[in-house]
Image (tube, rainbow, N blue to C red; front, side, top):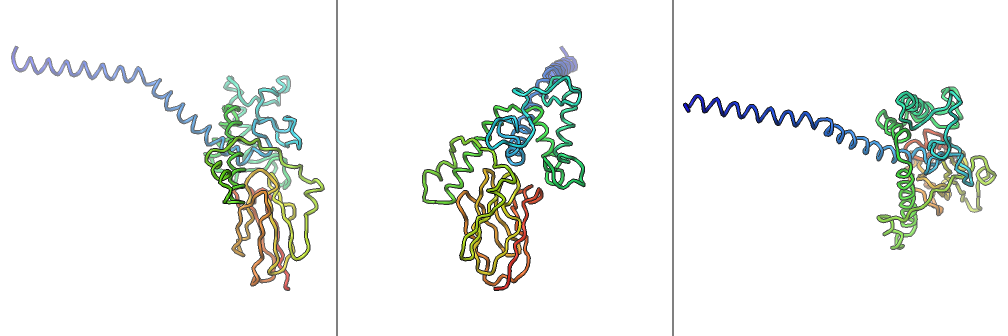
Amino acid sequence: MGAVQKLATVVIIGLVAMATVLVVYLADEPNRRGGETTEQESLAIERGTDLYITYCLQCHGPNGYGAQGGEDPQRVGAVLNQAPFPPDLENPASVVFQSDDPVQQDRAEAYVRYSIEFGKPSDPRIAVKSMPAFGQELNVEEINDLVYVVTNGDWNYIYNQTVLVTGESVAQAECDADPSNTEACEAVEHPEPVYPTAPPPIGTDDEATPAASEGGSTVLEALDPFEWSETELTVQPGDTIEVVNAGVSDHDFTVEELGISEVLTPDPIAITIPEDAAPGEYEFICSIPGHAENGMVGTLIIEAP
């Protein structure tokens, strides 16, 4: 065989080998794309679950049962987990959140997205809403993740993550309150599951009447989902405010103009008004994302001594 024939044979063999590899690659393309899609979906579920715990848990509960969960106090949110509470399919207004029907699924995604962005009622002229609007607080990707977790998520996974995160928050609060509590501080890394109880109903007598004590000290409570027990406090320089987290979600007490920012715990935190604070009105808020924007704002009035 001549040199030219040998070269031609090598080239042909190489082309056949390349063609074979290409055929195998293309044949496996659906599996490869499916693997990438699954990974992206898993990440969306993880991110969406974290967002659910931050923004949705207090009203809709760890299992998505909302007001139908039979808890005491009762939650105020709608049912998101329809497994035990299927919607009335005879009602054309019913929305099926998780469905194999692409038409139903598209409708559910549009409904959930609209509710997250604009709240309920969605009319922007209505200040008091049964569900806060998060369109200004969450970006497009975060809203997409929340929509995905409601319309595609596994509620067993969401529940398990919720009780673990709550357990971690409880352990962290106990550790912050008493750093010498070694057991609580170690539990932050390996928390025991804790069920997040429903917040007390807004407008109860306990919430409407703030506790006050003599000697220039006032007790202020942070309530779930986005409430202060009082929205106006009157103090003098040097007075002490005792602020307590009476809910199960994270809250803080922040007065930016006075340089005050304290993470709250179930035990009262004593906050002293600076002696040199000028008389006037100052805004106090909970600075955790979404809380001040949905009403966790008050006015601190400092009077001249």
